[in-house]
Amino acid sequence: MLRNRRERGEGQFGCLVGLVILLIVGLIAYKMIPIKVKAADLRETIVDESKSAGQHHDPQIRKQILTKAEQLGLPVSDNDVNIKRSGGNIGNIQISVHYTVPVEFPGFTYQWHFSVETDNPIF
Image 1 (tube, rainbow, N blue to C red):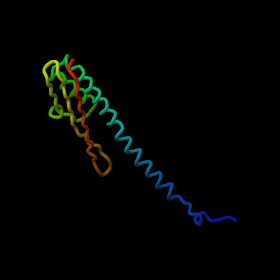
Image 2 (cartoon, one colour):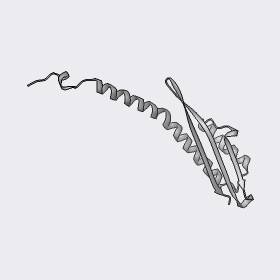
Image 3 (cartoon, rainbow, N blue to C red):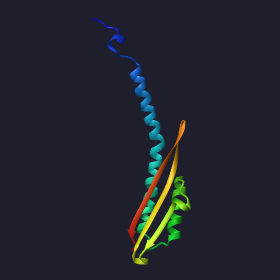
Image 4 (cartoon, helix red, strand yellow):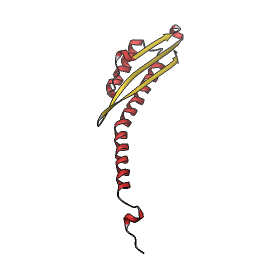
């Protein structure tokens, strides 16, 4: 016995909703994944600079971090980078960088906050 499609509850609405959800997830990934990759790259630079703190002075470290952030297109300013040494040349160095990246979506802007903190011994 043949049944009408509508009697079985099948229709195109579920497919349409699934497609819209897939497009929204794709848009979010398209906007946010490149920012996350850039933030990870900056984090790697910050960790590398903290590990070589025995060879560089604070202004050099700050300049390297700000230069890398500028290359990556991340909005990091001089005030966002904090460098603190304790114990002199054989102590620790703490570097913290806090910044916010605005992510533009249709209809609103998401403020994505990033915070990178390192605490390494100075060799």
